[in-house]
Length: 202
Ligand code: DGI
Ligand code: FE
Ligand code: FE
Image (cartoon, rainbow, N blue to C red; front, side, top):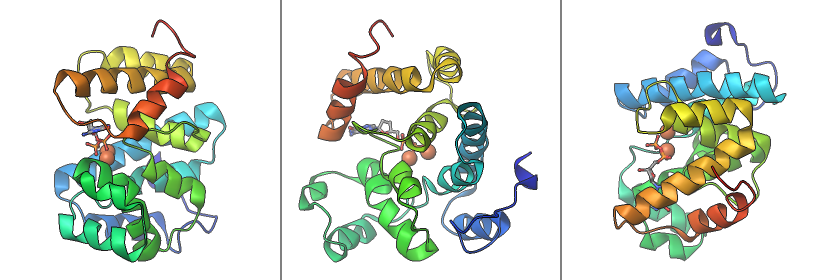
């Protein structure tokens, strides 16, 4: 049970309830519930894959911390923290992870790079992802309220083999973006190239 989880390590200076309270101030109720479902799924995947459950909890809860911030906050952060100025060509869909991780670091005091990278890469994936990064990327995609054609297959594949799940999402998200004439962030294409040819037929 998630509610019984106590933070024993020092990835966040406070209890899980303290972290929940901080996140609740940032998110509308629907999004706040989403991050708790992502946390629960991430914990499940962490247990299945021998990954630190506390890190999975913190990364799951914080992955969309910045999702509801105004664009100006992200633009300011890109300048203040000297992030790649090319990021300015994108929008909230990309910023809330990549730039959001910097806000999590500064505002919540979470400095573990594995957790921060899990936040950074949760939307686009990355060429190299640690097991924790793969878990957050997948938990966001298959949490129980997700409902899109193929989600059940995605769940089965992911619980059977995490890396194959990553390839499945990279492929289907890219196909979705192309179908909808949406701009594709180069990192999403890099993720596709790194993961999909290695897992043909998914
Ligand atoms: O924040 P969530 O909604 O929980 O989930 P998310 O951060 O994975 O965002 C999912 C959306 O992001 C989904 O509609 C696809 C979109 N997305 C993923 N990669 C890219 C992208 N959108 C654009 N424009 N470009 C990308 O490369
Ligand atoms: Fe997100
Ligand atoms: Fe999310």
